[in-house]
Image (cartoon, rainbow, N blue to C red):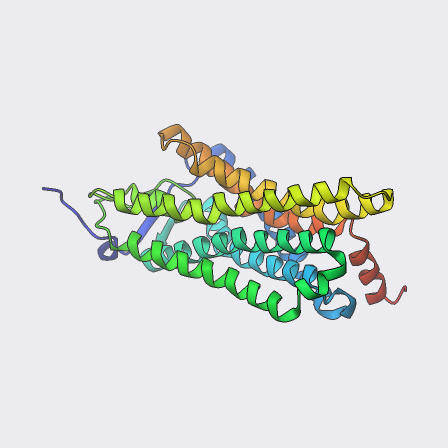
Length: 309
């Protein structure tokens, strides 16, 4: 008979994180802190600029503001805890803290998957149906799509969070990751978790594979429409507006799929930690740069804000 003990009795978990590579912890701390500050400043900049400039009150920038706010919340749900663990010897997180972190990381990650599909549809409507764009993307529909994205993410997370924290855990509370995630916590169980794993597989297919297929279909249609454009300026404008979104999608989905589609071996767990840094640290910090560096609308908005136009 297993000598099970619930984590609530002990009141904490130990996040192993990158403790197997102590010589890397200070370097990781500095690099991750820089990326986190870039994420905060860059995404806040997009949110404020989109709110202040009335010419950016369009569906594209409405969804981009949602993505920026989402990235701010997503990184804040796991990066501060990671920085604390990298800086000091103490690598614990309370049971309540772990539960809250699991819920929000999963909810916000799922929301981003759905929101990226919505943004792909918006770009499809803008490029392939420009004359009907205002009819296809009215403000009411934009708000409904945004609410649906957020609601689906938080609903999915509630399902997994409840299922994960109801299972009995073994004596040790060593989570082999730098934040509380479902697969890592399931490995602590002393009972079979086939039902949890099957549920995770099904929902991963629904919220990762299907969104990716929809996004690729959307960009396939966009590419076909762009190649038929006679004007080179039209080609450049279309690829300019869509290329940024495609880069974000590639970074986010490829890194996520590298983790969830590989077999759960000990070495894969170590690799998954570094891959997870891509979509929890790198991608949210690059989003503002990708969307603004080559975006003429944003550059003009900044000039207007500074009174130079």
